[in-house]
Structure formats: structure tokens, C-alpha cells
Image 1: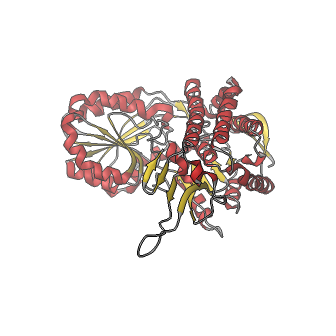
Image 2: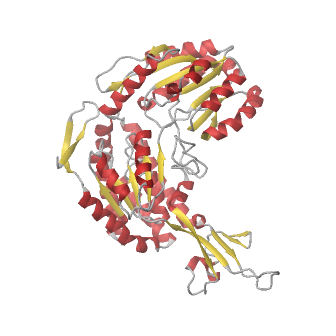
Image 3: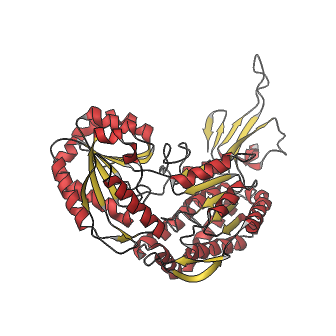
Length: 508
């Protein structure tokens, strides 16, 4: 096979023009171009690089409705969701442009020489962060815009000064091609080398494997399944020079219903929970796939409302036929697991649609069967009923790493929440109260990451401005003459707007 076509999510039928399948020659050419562009691109000034990111945002907006219509057909997602996702995509680019301009990402540190210090003098030491090199980015299936060709990984890597080679997701090649063309136009308009951005397409895993194994690639950004992420990690670690893979993989995002909140508003929480669970057919990395509650007042009301809302939930088109099949298999496996009670399922739909599923079990059964804690990607969730706080804590301690943990709580629950917080900190990258985890704000303080298997590196995030740190590394310069030093580390660069830590004192 030398070419492939888009598949309409609603029908499973091929649609649109054919795309040539990239192979080893194209991988080699893209990586060679990225490597050749690296020194030029990483030397760009803060304003030049920021303006480039803003140019990408403008080019994406200029595509207009064609982009939304392509994404709708390929993903099955509704117009409003995709228009919002486009806004998030350009917002991320503009946010990183602001980060680049302000310069804090450089982490400039200067410790002046102390020649008279006893018993030994101190040398002149200066530090900055530099980009790691060309980055491979894998587009995600569930966010064809915000986590794909020009998504967060691409935006943060470009902001860091790294050329990017994207492996477009095969589920939305037309959407990816439109965005890739927009980035290419921005590269040219900004006077940058063409190798600053590359785009590869194809339906097989071989393409991604070849990209990760190319010796010119210095880091990888990935959003997808646990199996896919771990496969890339193994490939990256088996290279002659291993590289980091920042993979966002698997999470069921526990929601804790604390007693006083449950007592006060159990029914309302049940309805709101199913609203969050079924949003976007449950195809969110932060979908609430696990609910934990202690037996007591309000639990029956919660379960009754959640059951009713599940039964009324309409079936929804899923992203791909493969995802739909995997979801159905996961639901069937849960239903067949001893100790699991099926409370309700949503309305039946078409062949390419998934329907909601709600289950209940006990803490003892959940702790005895680890498979209950594995992600079912879609609108499926299991409620674990605990006898007391100790049992609730045991369930939490036994969980895998998660992207999020949610506390529904009233003021009278504060003491319990405080006791649980140290456990939650070890299990999740984001802890939220009285909300639902499916909303991920793109801002400075956001963490979209967490302990394994939520991500392959719990020290990082793929959303928020801290994401830029994944693609930077520190270099220290000792006793270099000022004319040799990078410009931003010279004494005469002070006052350029970038913060500096000078002899331990923050200087703006």
C-alpha cells in the first residue's frame, strides 16, 4: 500500500483524497532537515520566536471553516467542540509566545567570581537552558487540533527552540494536512529554515518507530494508549543514545464523594457525574472512570440519579472503529468480572457509536482485582463503595498513577480531605475540588501529567507553560570571557526583561 484515505467516523467508510504513505526515505529527509535547521532556529531571539508562534496561530485561524468541517468528518466530534478546540490550539500558541518573550524559561543564573574567598576562590559561573534538539511529536486521536499537529507538544517544543517532526494521527489525515500546511506557511513567512517543521503521515506503527529511532531526534512527545506509549519508550531506550519520551497514556481519574457533600447533594452529584462521564463519548484523558464513596446518607440518592441519567444518555459516535471496538470489549470485560454489578447502560446506537455504562463494586472486590482499575476509554465508570475512611484510603493507596483526583466536599469534609491529601498527592498530577476533571485549563499553573501510567515521567506536564521544560536542558559556563558568553548571560544584557538569579538574588 502506497496511499491511504480518511475514514468518516460516523460510517467507517473512506472519504476524501488519498494521502501518500511516508516511509523510511521521508523519515530520513524530515529528520535531516530538522537537524540542519536546529542551530539556526535555536539561535532565534525571543521576539522572533514569539512572533513565529503567533504567525502559526494566525495561519490556523485563516484556514477557516474548512478545518472544522474536515475535523468533524474525521473525528465525529460536533462543531461547537471543535471550534472550541481550535480556540484552545491558537491560545496555546499565543500563550507560549508570551512565555518566550518574557524569558523566564531560560532560567538565567549568575554567580560572579569571588577571587578573595577563603579557603578557595569561587569561579565565575553562569547558567542558561538550551533546547535539546529536534523533537518527534505524535498526534492524538481524541484531540485532532489541540493535541495533534499544532497541539501542546508542538507549541512547547517550538517555544523551546526545537525543530519538530510530527507523526500525524492516521484517524484525521486531512485535518492534520491542513494544519501542517498552515505551520509551513508560517515557517516561510518568518524566514526560518524549512526543517523547523516536518509532517509525516501513514497508518502503520512502523512510521512512528522509525521516527523515534532516528539518531537526530532528541525527545518525543506522545498522547495515546499505554501500549503505544510504552512501545515508544522501549524503542527510545534501546537506541545507542537513549532519549526521553514524554508519554501521556492511561488514567481513570478517581472522584471522591466525601460524606457531608454526598449527604447534602447526592442526587445532584449523580446527574452531574454522568454529564461529565458522557461528554464527548467519554473520550477524554481526564474522564471520571472511577468514583469512590463511603457508605452513608446520600449514596443511594447519588446512585439512583446516576443510574437514571445513564439510562437516558444517548449513544455517541466514537473517534474510530478501533476505539469503539476496544471500548465495547472493555465494558464487556467489566460486566463479566466477579464482584461487579452493572447498574445501567445508555441508549443503544449505531455500529460506530458507544453507549454509556455504569458499574458498582465493593472496596474489597476492587482491591482484589487490579483489572477493575484499568482504563476503559469511553463513557464507562465504576462506583466503589467503601465501608469507612480506612477502606477508602486503602483503595487510594492501591491505585495506579492518575492525571487527576477530584474531591467533592463541603466545609465539614475539610478535615477528612486534609487527611487524604498526602495520599492523593502521590497518585495524581492535579487535585481539584467540587468540579469535574474533564476541563483542562491552559495556563501557567496547570499540570496535565502524573505518576505512571498516567505519564512516563511524573516530573513533567503536557499542558501549561511548564511543558516547555521538557525540551530544555541546562548548560553552565565557567570563567568564559564576556565576548564568548551567550548574549543573555553577559553583564550588559541585564535589563532586557528576562529575570535572572544573580548571586542568589532574583533580579528583574
